[in-house]
Length: 213
Figure (tube, rainbow, N blue to C red):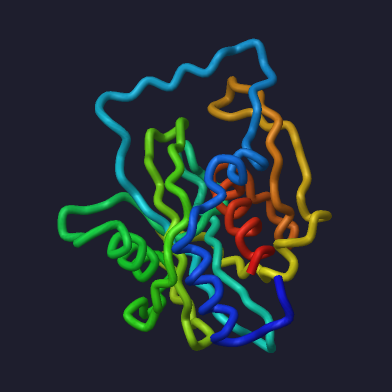
């Protein structure tokens, strides 16, 4: 990233997102790999579900941040995991950008009518949940105030982009998913939180782009 700040940096990011994206080459740098004897067996009825998430940048003391959310513990596949706010497309959504804005407002209580849409990252298919996820990138010109929905969010975690691009926060660990699949998962150590899987893959592409602008 060059020595620049403020709206000029956001303008550069917006122009870069209109160009050819790094895509899978960047995403797969943070992809988990199968390590156990039990083969994956994810069976779903129907096509992938369209969904989107929002990477909402804002400035504080000269640095850029964005919020992540930790899901509460529940019976679903993403129980307790950390991700970007978002969810599946609903019939009332005009498009998947609208989905990302609506879901973010519902989940963390930010007025997303104030969010400037900068662009999109590459769509990512999440095999474990049969979702096609579109990461939307936006900019909020003020520091957000959160009012999270406790049924969907147990904690809002702010990530500093300056920290995110440091190589030393990339780590790796063994995980057991669905109580039977052993994987080796690269992850971002963000404020002592493990951010892995699809979210880490999306952030990997964002980091690649951020380093170019």
